[in-house]
Image (tube, rainbow, N blue to C red; front, side, top):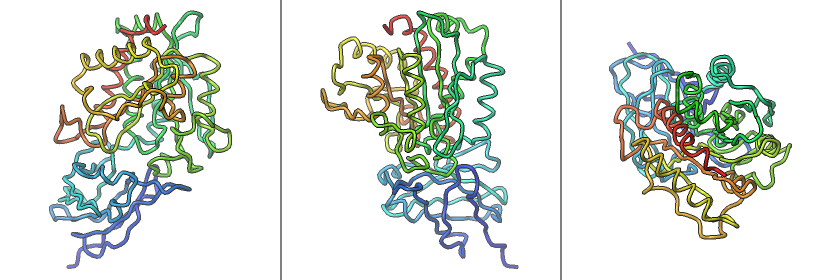
Length: 381
């Protein structure tokens, strides 16, 4: 009896795939769709039904070699799940053109993705948890280009003299590890008997935007919002029409002030956790340099999932790209301002063969970052 044909779907939150040929289940040919109004593509997320348990299946992303970061596929393994809750890595190969992975399923349906997705449903749950269980205030709500909510949350009362600590995530919609990071922060904020956390909250208020680009994530984009705008290149020319997400964030920052800014991201190519900072900014000062180094040193002490050897080449003095959030906010508010990057692959200095870098590890990093901020809050100004 002939096997039932495989069926593919990606018409769901963060779905992205185009089926080219599934006539041979051992050599299924697929392609990744580009972002709307943009040539960027790399994120994929799709469901397969009709798998034959115990039989080999093969999938090929035929246009991987033309993606935004084609060098990122070397050493990368796709993630898979049978229930969209537990995700694991699938050995994958890249030949310079296509990314291929083989799979012997245990069940007749499975999901595959570039990284463990953070759904809009889970986001809505997270906002509810933040307000009802972690004691955060829903301070303001902005709107994305397509009208989705951008929630600004605050932990603290906004009283005079408190430091203002800002954390935002997922400007680039395919970087789902960034909202897992924010979930870890909110999970820790539920604790009532955390002495370190309580000391931080006595010194500082926390301002959180857990997801900056809900349109892009919903549509399965890698890099841009619904208007085709890279939000992390919009901090000098943010507009209500093309980048309303950044426009909203800047309005709120101007209203409340910023003493520390962390922008959570994921990096496709570098298999490490690292930070990028403001050394190329005009008027970069020794005070900021010392704060940056102290943050890095303390995070290294806090977790084996952070390191200072691998990362981006540091900007020369005066050569920073001022359209980036980190640089723009650091200059505007004369504050410690960092981009925190997590890998799509694994942390090569602290690897996990089953999950690689994961949502769980991203969330734990969020908790660890709060410990570092607690140690630094008093000295931010």
